[in-house]
Length: 171
Image: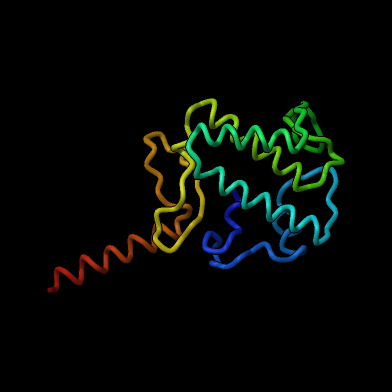
């Protein structure tokens, strides 16, 4: 989801936050990605295409998402296997560590979508309810009521509503 929220209108800055190789490196830095990372323009463009694909699938209905996810898995040549490296215990990798970064990200996103689809929880994948934000969120709340991608968006919408109520009360 972090990748998807680097898009214009979805990012904290409101601009595209994935326009340079350096921005891609900064996005990856907090995570322990293993395998091939080329640090070049072609990789950046592939990751940007992956971001757009994830955003498309996010808003699909379940049956359309199945078709898209199956295509993602096929095109990424996904062949899941359990791996352990660094400080991480056993977890799934869906492609070869030699595969291009964008291909590995597509496969990982597809694997995550598989779980959401199997659990019939596509309605938990949402776009932020703030009118000026297209950020994506996964609603993991018990009652399914999460509406905003961040506290920042929630606070901003609530402040606007509060000001409108206060202004109306003053008449």
